[in-house]
Image 1 (tube, one colour):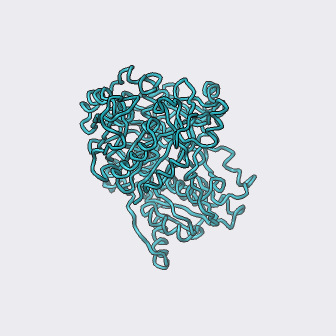
Image 2 (tube, rainbow, N blue to C red):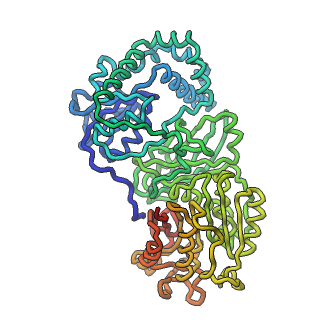
Length: 620
């Protein structure tokens, strides 16, 4: 349903590559880069969990595939695709083994957390030394991936320790376009760093592990030597870039325009230090769910157990038109330490569903909200069905701010027309004390309630009442909206949110508010604007009686007054939309760049958002 900034399509890349993913060597991070460089139909993943499908490129090759990536021996595709360039990433064998141990240990704990799956002996109790001495763990790189081949048979051998530098070199060699490199995955097990220090400081263990992994040690030393020679003769200008300061999956300047998806987290349970999430998610036309990005609080979890595409006749009954709605349910298990469990009660749980390498709309959940619910009469006044709908709306807006605007926990945000604190209710679980929230409204009782319930608990959340005239919400107001100057200095905020106000303001008021929003935003700052965009499609749907409204009554924007379309000619402020072309013109005239335009279901479209949505950016 979105028109501006359609999902990124990489430029044509001719390089054909076979990429051998050795576990715990940044292969997952490399896979994310490949998804940016190549079209989805040009990538084939060869992993054991795909069963017989992993051999499809040998038995029934798919035309157009340019990259094969996964866990398989280096020689697997030599005869079938001799022209492809082979790539492998290696890592210090002892450090890789320690990382693999905790990956394996975490997996065992997750499996054993289900009483019905308890084994006679819990393998998760194995020590690192016992794990390393397993025959199948010795010289794993040589025996399972390199085998009888030589490293000189590979087009490129990268080193995980120098991942960003080597990746930049590979980009130049293969003439790849630009990519975004996210923070490399880190092992989530809480004792990983302690064991790493313990093992590396114990020369006896180091010698023992080195002896039983001599072939892998020699391979790694050879890889370092090849890298050194390659750098000496290469004409590529090297650089080093620190990605450690990158934000997690929520709270950074993200790509916008998520896929049109529906979903929810229905249940959250903690058992045996394992967080269990269950729910459902489906897309409009992006195929079936492939996986998730998972974040709890401000920490991203790169390893978790997931079960997806579970039969869901209940979802299919409610959403029969969604792709894969009959198999839309999921279960996720995440291992937590005690500190994480202690903090979980009020932490924001975020799931970003993945479809064909693209992101769907973020799904948010909190075990126990920090704030009490507003008074039911206030919830009714702002147009929400009930308290449950109020909560869903609040967290949906929070998801939009995080995912579409890139709102960070330390940002300063202005909420124009904040009503009873719909945005703030969810935002208190995300904004850090160093961040700042300012909200204002024309309804005095709304502001009084928000100050009592929110500011008294969160000092960095401020609410102000301004006696601005509004025929519906403040008919005795003494200040004209067109004369009201926002009481904030220039460039005060990173983000501005207007969740509903523009659906109750007339043209001259909207133009003035756009001026003020531009003034108080920093250069590069973004604005989330919820509105009604009237165009030929929405007018046709309204004429056919398709409009669904925001509660139960149809939303008939049929009375045209200059640039406005409203539902009541005698009191236009009950519901106002604007000619799409005219509103976008006003926005651009003030120096905003329109980053996203997504249409809602208010007029009868198929969409997962109610009203229409714009993301604006103040030009730098």
